[in-house]
Image (cartoon, rainbow over all chains, first blue to last red; front, side, top):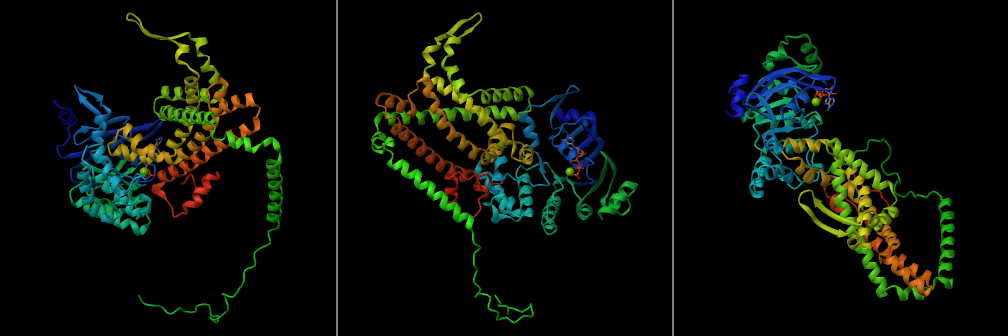
Length: 267
Length: 314
Ligand SMILES: Nc1ncnc2c1ncn2[C@@H]1O[C@H](COP(=O)(O)OP(=O)(O)OP(=O)(O)O)[C@@H](O)[C@H]1O
Ligand SMILES: [Mg+2]
């Protein structure tokens, strides 16, 4: 039995689950940041996570692509542990090369863009496809051009990141993540570092992505975006999921007092 | 394009004579006094150099391209290049160990830097030169297999090799610190973004971190190369025939001490100048992703005259 099949059978992972989290815990020393997260993000759906600062939203995203190691619980992406293989009921840490290969399938977009500042836009886009996936430069460039057109930045291919506005940089960062053809895209407050008038262009790109069927987990403060685009709205506080449901439903009619209080502050 | 009539919003008449005002600069007496004193000094020093027969400019000029001086200069340059190259390799390895997640590697690297930066270069030099006192032979033997090779220490620890080994190890200690600081100056987000894309630790270091660290590494490394060039004059102590040693052996015979020191100083200054120009272009290359509009001539002059302004761009 493959590791993937064994995991699916053992934890009862639904066939359509892209992200599957079960009692996910994470602590830094004595600080418990995640205290048992249960969550399923189905393939092709958009999950939006909201919550106050320090509630563990970023930490949870970073656990999904194994930038952080779990303290406890199970976290599977497409039915597979990212950093481990399950064999005969034991978790074996995988080789670095396999970890890299699996991470490449999980795209991440950061609040601070994190474009490689010594590379042009085009170089940013072809770096990982050529180095990690072994694509030829010509092939990678061709698909990078398609992606740049998709985020509306075809004319910026030769620019360095610092020559672009924040909104443009973030759109390049999204294109860079897409260049790896990921199974799922994680967004950590992608518009929080942007001037208000630049937020719209980035949200538009994300909206188009959602429509194209990309599975997305989005940590955001844009309640409007969550309501319109999200299939699920998850409210996190102090390391637990306090409330989860259909976005319109949660926003219009929050069940918990904490959700109500948080929404009243951000709306 | 439509031309918009300028609208007067001040309520004052528009034809006030603004352009005709003359600006009278503030008097800067301090600066003029400073210049006068500096010129006076320059005059006396220049006069002393030109008229004191001890300087003997004619003799200095005769020795400037003397074949032994040229050979010595060549040896000095060779030493600098070889030592710098070795030190960059060793220093990079030590720096990577220092930022690695392994506590053992970190400790080893810190100990290395502590020792090789702490002991004076001259002492390290003489130590390596005298290595044969400690180990008569260097041999590799594997238990059960026997001796693979064995050589007499004195046969390979020539003065030149001792100089290269000693000064590379010493210089690597300084470079390791420079490179580590450069690596640390690259924002952590770059590392995370690259890991998120599935790049391996090696790829991230080589492709993402080190190239960005270069902007912070090149300027102080240029300074290190320049001070290394001068530091190689220490090899005179173990009789490597570099520029300074050659000059010394000439004036030991002819007693033309000052002219030969002038020749030596001239060549060191000349090489340092050339190195500064090289450093300037390296800095431009590694700063290309954030070049501002700037006058290249002014930047060149700044870097020649040692002004560090603008060399570490943020
Ligand atoms: N590497 C770390 N070491 C120690 N503590 C950490 C580390 N990373 C995060 N934390 C702590 O974990 C908690 C949750 O952090 P996290 O970044 O996940 O919050 P967040 O919900 O994303 O908040 P924000 O909205 O401000 O981004 C915080 O208290 C933070 O101080
Ligand atoms: Mg966060």
